[in-house]
Image (cartoon, rainbow, N blue to C red; front, side, top):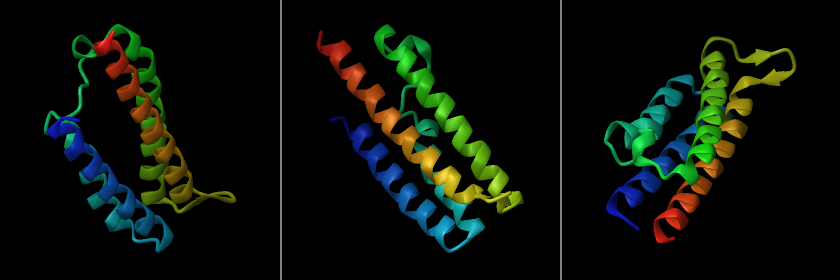
Length: 118
């Protein structure tokens, strides 16, 4: 695994721990700090986001990862403004979607690694 991959895992792990604490204890400012760690790998260039950098086989999985991430952050940003949408706690909805996005991101990396090795 590359150094960028390890840095990405560390940042996502820190973000996850902070997101859990933020949503469980309703510490909305902590959400902003967690989001910083979550997006740091993209800003630092440790994650590939340009289509030209991603193998064609991994692009559909990358799109799914992106859509789930966007949905998660839509719920998270809504949670910052209003805590609940009816009976749904938007913080917990964010957390569920965010974990699905993380899993989708791991799948993208798996498909990328298989494409490079093929």
